[in-house]
Amino acid sequence: MASGSETVSVLDEHGRVRPTAAAEPYADRALAVPLEQRIGFLKDMVMTRAFDVAAANLQRQGHLALWVPSYGQEAAQVGSGRAARAQDTIFPAYREHAVGMVRGLDPMAIIRLLRGMSHGGWDPAENGNFRLYTLVIGSQTLHATGYAMGIQLDGAMATGDPETDEAVMVYFGDGASAQGDTNEAFVFAASYRTPQVFFLQNNHWAISVPVERQSRVPLAQRADGFGMPGVRVDGNDVLASYAVTAELLDDARAGRGPALIEALTYRIGAHTSSDDPTKYRSEDELARWSERDPILRLRHHLESEGVAAEVFETIDAEAAELAADVRRQTVELPEPPVSLMFEHVYSEPHPLTDAQLEWLTQYEASFGGAS
Ligand SMILES: Cc1ncc(C[n+]2csc(CCOP(=O)(O)OP(=O)(O)O)c2C)c(N)n1
Ligand SMILES: [Mg+2]
Image (cartoon, rainbow, N blue to C red; front, side):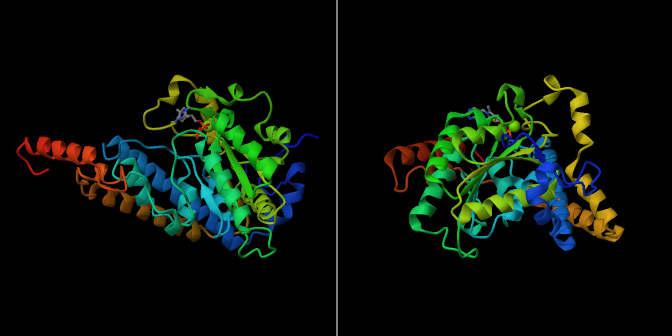
């Protein structure tokens, strides 16, 4: 059977434990996740959702230049993000807010980026090796593969020590799967057997282009042609997402080569705040996927495991607090000085940028107010 033709799922749509046939190699690992950790997954997902909704509203109120919603993709992101080890390096695209948060990134760093206040975002070394967002579709797959080749050259893998062996995980979308960069990254990764996992979130849309335009076969099957395993996972099932990623990252760290995961999920929100999805997708489709909300699924599962109502109430209250805090901090953000955009163009002072700064400073002063 070609890999990727079946979907790994452990929780069904109602949150019941019903592993599919394809889940067989991963089910033990998924079901061994202690209840406390499953509650932690729910908290990660609920916190990210609250952050995402607050940020989308802030954009609508004029406080952010742009917002890129993660709404609906929380299980794919939290499951995979929590499967990575501290020493692993993560290359996101631009929608992976949940992954950033589980790696310890202050969500205000994302806010500052999308308010246009910072020109990169954060220092990955101080933020869980969570590298910078990239809007150039698919480019991060090459960065990730290059980094993974570096790990190989450094001998920082396959030593047999799970505490220090490193791997890389790169996130990208169904649209990015059709980019040249991504396919070149697959070629290099497979032929050099780099220690990395390609985590493809198939959220069914690349802005207004449906996934059917990207491929005639399930995207996970593409891995076969490059010579690496491809696994299709139910991306709205956090336990499946966690178990498959943990397994394949272990393989990568141990020197057993790269793999492709296709996580089936759905972008419930707009592509970005500049997009109007009602122009190209049906209400029925949206309603069908809204019923498969990954947070509700995990919540139903935890309820059936006997988790008390107060636990959910506490999580919801903490999430509301985070959202309020993000709103408060955002409206209080100071305007950055106009000089900031010139400061990081070159590492040394440069006469051209100096002249431009001088001109802009005088121009701002011509309005009479403080610049
Ligand atoms: C190289 C490049 N081409 C085109 C674009 C414009 N663009 C921005 S997002 C996007 C769609 C990406 O879809 P997908 O990879 O499925 O990711 P998603 O946004 O669904 O998470 C495109 C074409 C871009 N940013 N970079
Ligand atoms: Mg997509």
